[in-house]
Image (cartoon, rainbow, N blue to C red; front, side, top):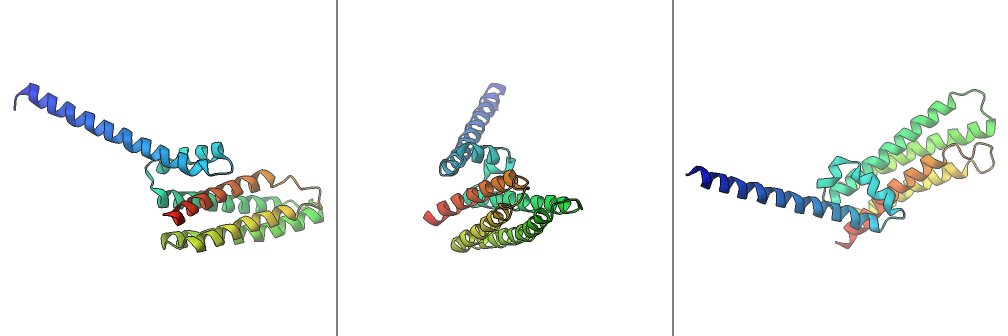
Length: 179
């Protein structure tokens, strides 16, 4: 093959590959946009998925697994944070009890999300919804436990982020149900 022809063929292959990658990246961005358009907080949703490199090539089910992993990680991180707070022996007894209850509730949330991951892998979207909603309820119950104490702000931002992550899962799950 002549060098000019080889160069032309190589250029053609390279440009086709780049354009295919661009269209795949565009499709992936469109999937994240489609999911996040249904979220309670679109900007936060987009930011969460775009910060995860695996999200860019994920299909809807894979995006659901990523979302569940992120939510489960946040629940486990919050559970650990609560245990650290409980080491403080100078806490108000009401705050201490609320944190102790939250510790149990976040452990339950971690288990619920673990169940949801298994259910999603088995295409059990109704079960995923129930498990994720149970996880959200556990976080809400934790937050409600602080209503009568001076420590009501301790977990507010963590609970809000956890709910956002769970809501992302619910949006993806709903899209999977519609397929």
